[in-house]
Amino acid sequence: MMTRTLLLLSLVALLAACAATGSSSTTFPTISSDGLHLVPDSRARAFYLKPGADLSEYNKIALLEVYVAFAKNWQRDYNSSTDFLNQVSDKDVKEIRQRVAKEFNSEMTRVLTQDGRQLVSEGGTGVLIVRPAIVDLRITAPDVMTPAMDATFVASAGSMTLYMELLDGKSGELIARIIDPEAASNDGVMEIANSVTNAADFDRIVDRWASILNSHLAQVTTAN
Image 1 (spheres, rainbow, N blue to C red):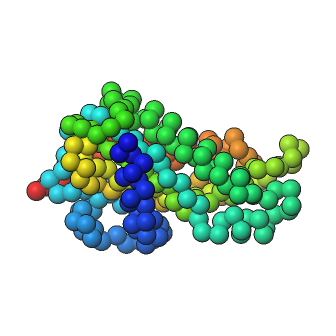
Image 2 (cartoon, rainbow, N blue to C red):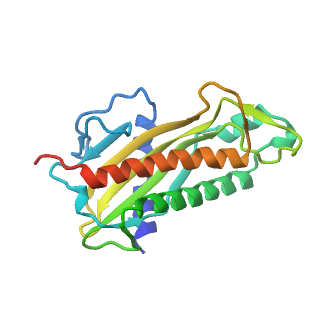
Image 3 (cartoon, helix red, strand yellow):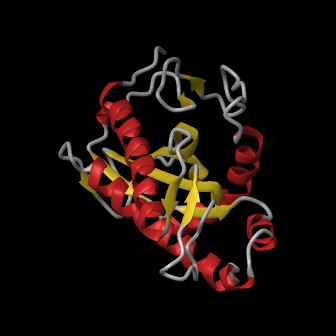
């Protein structure tokens, strides 16, 4: 299948780009190194588009499996700050990544098909290939083994950065890129955090990302 091959081949370059653009204070160049142009006034931190591209011509979506990567040393730093019962194991990290990927796919699919677009498994005419990655994932309270009687209060459930490439399904050409770091905020109020609240916060962020993509699919066209 094209999906896994394309994702793995581009992973090294993708993560390198993310490392350079993950900060919300980053100033993005007007034109990217691969010739995409920064679209002004986007709801995403950065939205790049190929000159002359019209995303509204795509009525089918091929959503590739999302790659999920924690922030560097997140597991080590978290474990050094908590007690033995709440240590995050390698197995926990793997399961969290799988859960995040599953929730991302489910929420993106739900939003992207609301306007009648068809979800397909391969490229072709009228197909937009969506190649996503979530990087720099940080979870404040992963709720791995917290006893039911205990409560963890946090001001933010965590943060993560979306790095998403959009490719033409017929030619495989890269036509757009979205980069958007997001944090789950409680507006400064300390709230209970657990697997249920973490999932709800995650879904709200992914819903926002899918809505941003939806709005660009409907409207965005750049001049030749």
